[in-house]
Image (cartoon, rainbow, N blue to C red; front, side, top):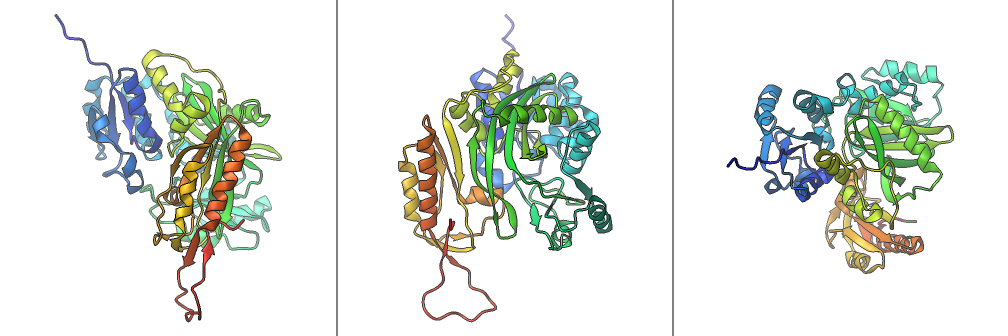
Length: 440
């Protein structure tokens, strides 16, 4: 008797953050997962989500694509998926070689990772974009600002291949855009990429949303739409305050979904998950960026509570059973993520007040590890936000969620942060100064 053949494995490139959810989802359908690491070692920010025991095999990419293809091909993988942003490019290359019928458009690979190429692809497809330039030439930026009539307007400067708002800076009208441009250019960012160019764009005003999708054979489906709340924190423009799930009958949802589908087509994403950040402006939706992988930070797991489904679950069902997901989603519970913010750097005290988060009626999940005496950095980007902590609130009644959001902010405001001393100033008499976590 011939033994039952082993099921074809799902290959996950950099199965970190939300990408770690692929392995249990495939396992629930009787399919093993294989991990491929695109970097020499797991980035520190992803270390907590890396569970090698979940994987049938673990491969490390050493720069030799042919060697990796030869090692993975005998497994006859059923799919190759990017788990985290760092794995997007390698997942594309492996899919082209191992499963060409599932490949996203190879000629548009750069547009699925590089923000400069992304904008060019959208313009070529006739999809409206925020006015921007991507270059390493400060003179070209100066000339572009003059040509576009953007003198005296707020601008954004950011690396084209970073993530989690790393290096994203708002330059207010009258300030010198060359300061962040020069500071970031030539730097190795948190994702081990060289900032060899910089994006400079007009600062878009409106309401920012994220549309999370799963695509198969060019058919796009929306797993959820969420609204962002962000705030300035000193010179940083993209500090997260809140993420709120949007009901599918909200008038913004069909507008955003249509635009998201146009973006997916423009960058050639035919198969897999995507996380599409969109600003809904007075002139219509405009792309902030598309990430060709699942929404990070554990979002797909929370989405199961909010909607009963997720990008990751849709992917597993499709690649195992060819079960086509619905085009849209349902909202079963109102849900918000509240992100803690440190307005100043210093030493924190009074953290016991945060214990009350777990007692809130809508408490679903929280990750808050602050203790008295901890030193905190002023929140500058998403990674700093996640390090500080967040609370996920969910309830059938939206009024309960809103009350609990206000309660979390009140607890945060009760934190005391003693700012770092100014080395250029003599110590003041009396007690040290204090800084509140989030003055409202």
